[in-house]
Amino acid sequence: MAIKCTISEVGRHVDQTVTIGAWIHNKRSSGKIQFLQLRDGSGYIQGVVVKSEVSEQIWDDAKSLTQESSLYVTGVVREEPRSQSGYELTVTGIEIIHLTENYPITPKEHGVDFLMDHRHLWLRAPKQRAILLIRAQIIRAVQQFFDSNGFTKVDPPILTPSSAEGTTELFHIKYFDEDAFLTQSGQLYMEAAAMALGKVYSFGPTFRAEKSKTRRHLIEFWMIEPEMAFVDLEESLRIQEQFVSYVVQSVLENCRKELETIGRDISKLENIQGEFPRITYDEAIEFLQGQGFDIPWGEDFGAPHETAIAEKYDKPVFITHYPASIKAFYMKPDPSRPEVVLCADMIAPEGYGEIIGGSQRIDDPELMAQRFAEHSLAQEAYQWYMDLRTYGTVPHSGFGLGLERTVAWICGLDHVRETIAFPRMLYRLYP
Ligand code: 4AD
Ligand code: MG
Image (cartoon, rainbow, N blue to C red; front, side, top):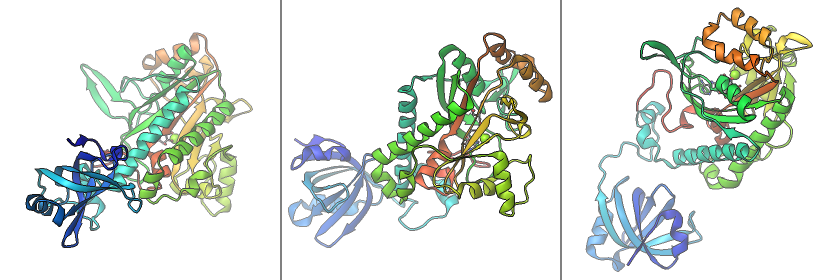
């Protein structure tokens, strides 16, 4: 009787007969032997069908198998040091589930639009699978880091009555008779949670109706948002360094094979530990102007600016103390220089851009009220947020890490569209 197992489990069954549910990834033949490249999601293994050792039926069934056909394959597990998995299957039986005809994605090159239209099938490609495994490991590492450092996971709402980051990029929906918006950031709610639990973090989807068609923007993306009571900007930056280092090192430890599959230069990631460099907004402007960029003080950075700054370093770099005028309403002004705020963006190396945005938050109720007025934010909608300052206000800080940009950087991908199973992008909602 054959043992049912997955490809990842065959190592436990050397010299035994196993049955695996699988798809044909690829196939080649040398007359008297057929080599089936099998995949089952858990891994890859080669199945060897030897004409002289199987019935005519099995030989013919093997012959009929096409790319992405599904089957139960039975065989004896052999150790095979020359193969990538370390094992090989000597096939003794084949039960075809479905013969696939004309699978649209062939081993030849396809254009990106074609692949995006077939994203539901493209996911089966080894590179796409590797990326999703790395993404899952990043999520695991994020949770391990915060769970083991005294943070409590809290889930902010997705349907919200007001905006967190400004009103222009909101997805507007109806909430029965009221207006509502899909969340852009859970931050404001996480501030409330921090006042209840001290150190909290969220991990959830966020939505931005940004008309940006760049390799760094998604319409729907996932964010990790820690918020910490009694923590100032300096302390928050320390936590961010440790957090990002932990995540990168954990991927290096757990995803060697996947990083190899996608061809990532691992030496670039090995550097990511210890303290990260810092530069103020003022210094960044001066540097950029020195490089010939035409950018006045007070303007926000775009992708080329971020890339030019990041190129000076082999680790992520913090840009701190931006002008208040280009940052969100809730950021605390620097007491010694109120035109700049106690904030930092973390810019990833190698041109991947901003992966974290964060700040110390305004804790003074009067200044907060003033900001609402300046930004024409409806007081009623934010009354609950004001209450956090009215009842036991404390210094607090937090930040948001964009998951997809982090995956793009760690995997070394050109575009965020490959970092999530079904990307939502400007003018693309299918599949
Ligand atoms: O800098 P952002 O807008 O910050 C916030 O939303 C804060 N409320 C976070 C906080 O302090 N709790 O966004 C944070 C990060 C960015 O650094 C970027 O990595 C990612 O979210 N991000 C996007 N990722 C993909 N597509 C988009 N359109 C993104 N917009 C932001
Ligand atoms: Mg930002």
